Length: 180
Image (cartoon, rainbow, N blue to C red; front, side, top):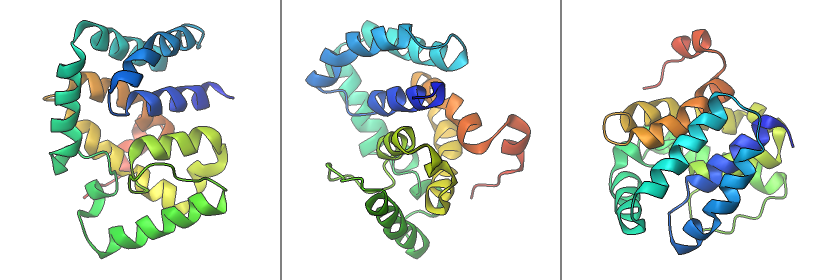
């Protein structure tokens, strides 16, 4: 597993709903992160975990629900940030499901195929997935999500920010990407 794959896997886990099991696994995740290569990715994860350790579980759950389940502007369904609920998005969701099936991924949750933790899990386990058209297109929605999280949930935006370079390329390439 590459450094990038490890980062994607950990972020996928940390972007899940913070239920009781989530908090039970934090020490294991923290230990794993401690063995990762030092740098901005690891620092963003450590900062996020430190935030989680300072808040009550109920507060973390309320914030997660408010941000990602109740607010379309910060949903973790990343294609929504590109097209809202429209025909283009529906076609891409179908293509994503086909990509997962073609790679042998069995979706265990009821989440839509553009759910960010699911995509990150897929990227971590199928490294060439970044180059699949449907995945590549879907990931462009992360830039908008990160920007929308900055004012109210900087710990989440800080965790996701290193994804931009991984997914969209260096900063100069990101500037050229237009997300509507």
